[in-house]
Length: 115
Picture 1 (cartoon, rainbow, N blue to C red):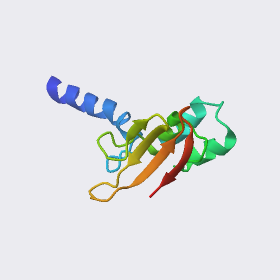
Picture 2 (picture 1 turned 30 degrees about the vertical axis):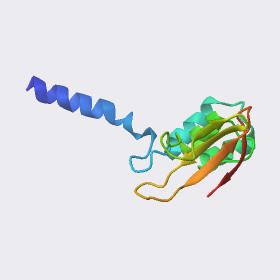
Picture 3 (picture 1 turned 180 degrees about the vertical axis):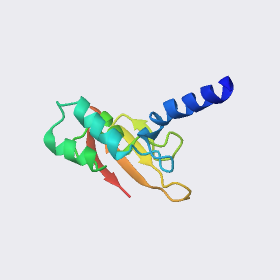
């Protein structure tokens, strides 16, 4: 009986922590994006709205892009670091095609993106 009770406790305790990203895409959930914005009142209002909506904008920081879209693909061809800045690829799950690539200047601000 103790084993069943402990298992049930762990299952319900961990359930609240598990939903910060979508299991299918790895992107932050709307709740996680809203929590990030609330935790960072210094973010400009135009970026707050974009993050809450799961969008990115030119000028956003890497942390703001992560808050909106999640972590980039670490093994994808489009994720690179160069003297001109970095690029992060966001792949399309279960697809051989490239998703979107986000470009950053050397200071870490978004300069654009492509499909």
